[in-house]
Length: 186
Image 1 (cartoon, one colour):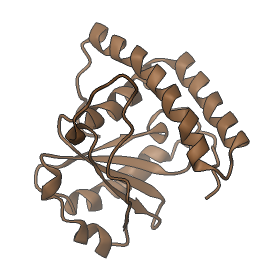
Image 2: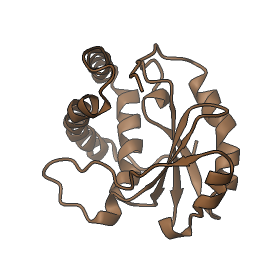
Image 3: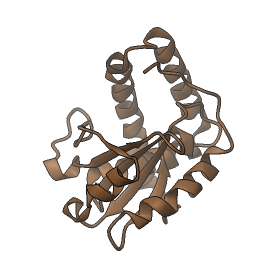
Image 4: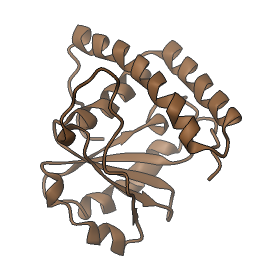
């Protein structure tokens, strides 16, 4: 699939809100949703794919059958990227990932409450929202990577992930300084 970074679209938050009710209905009791990823950062160019995080108490509570029956495809990716120098337990990176192509392209990341990978995208989203210079530089990197590697997702992410790890260092310091906490569900 070709990597295309599109200008920010003000409809992305509304797209998330339209998808959220069905996804929560397929999720275990107590699950909640956040709009994550670049489409959740106002003004940030992104791939036109809505990233949604569903937080659950335990991944074993999730029944993939409901997602599959409603046209979602389950991805083989069951673990997130671990930033270099971090020694994380497997449960801190574990996830379920479902891909939706209709009615709208979306990636549904299901993660366990309190795990590193559940907090990471929320912190990064909030940090980018609060730091427009960092957001602009990150956007430029994504656009250039998509230009250099339009057909090579592995190369795109092999460079993008470490860049995001560098941004994460600043985000962690910002979180400590501002006493950042997980935001309420979107």
